[in-house]
Image 1 (tube, one colour):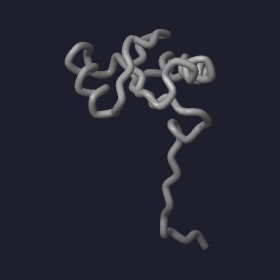
Image 2 (cartoon, helix red, strand yellow; image 1 turned 90 degrees about the vertical axis):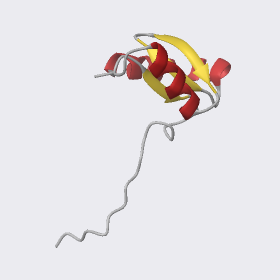
Image 3 (tube, helix red, strand yellow; image 1 turned 60 degrees about the vertical axis):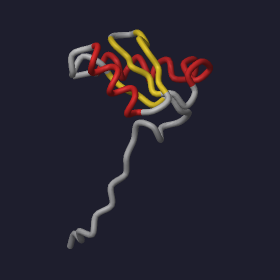
Image 4 (cartoon, rainbow, N blue to C red; image 1 turned 90 degrees about the horizontal axis):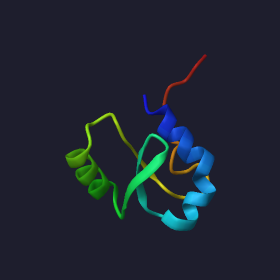
Length: 78
């Protein structure tokens, strides 16, 4: 759904870090349209200006931590 925006972030992560380190980016297409200090602020401002589903909010940090999650389960397979 927002594949283009996420691919843009991944392809330009290192250069974006130079300007937007530890900021929350609002990305539309292949362009950063805004940056904010918190996820809540980024969501509030972006959702008031752009239609939901048309923008990506991505924390700009080095490595994969900002875009990967690990979930632990108590399920046992036998």
